[in-house]
Image (cartoon, rainbow, N blue to C red; front, top):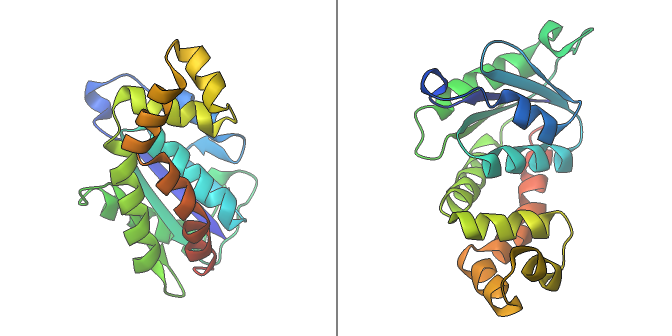
Length: 184
């Protein structure tokens, strides 16, 4: 079982962004307390996608716990090692330059954490224009459609894609999912 605990950074001085992230992540997540949300997922690819969605949203401490656990009637009623590990991970993430950490009952956490932190750094370094191109491409738009949507040339889309390392991020996503899969 994979448990993601995601806590809003600097929530005391900014608006509540939990509803926005909940809408982006889907029904596997719910608000647990205050500015925090939690999700229970089973598939490594789904976990990787949820992490990358939170990273792209920006401003989140992200902790992944992998191990045994029981979800219960709701995520808040969940218990077991995966939940404890997710709590430890989100707390550990707060001390990282890229606020992402992994804790796992069966090892392999350091590799998944290292790649996740690198991905967070790449995503966080994007300009607003590069992030917009990445988001539109993520949702299946072609380069021509992105150009038309943004009122720019296809060449400008390509330049933003290259500068934002969008292709490289997409290329390592399967590796990230495999590393996560090795945690459980």
